[in-house]
Amino acid sequence: MKNMGQLLKQAQQMQAKMTVLQNEMANREVEVAAGGGMVKIKMNGKQELLSIKIDPECVDPTDVEMLEELVKTAFSQALKESQEMMSTAMSKITGGVSIPGLF
Image (cartoon, rainbow, N blue to C red):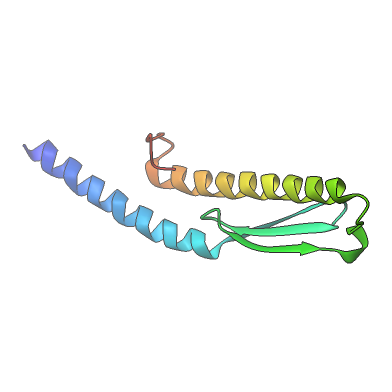
């Protein structure tokens, strides 16, 4: 039973650390650009979209598809970087052990 109590205590400590981490991730940001900086997207560590900046020079009414592709590319990269940032931070808490369903 002593081991069970210690395990429970460790789980509670890990949960507290994860709560702190989630709050920190809301304040950490990544910013990526596509099309040579024509489209910029900023996202936080909780994968929340914070801003999209589009250079007016890349807004061509005859080529909307290009703008859509730039936005999609920038968003995908921002999401990937945000997820990697969270994964790296989580691995510090879990000691590199992957816990299914956490992040």
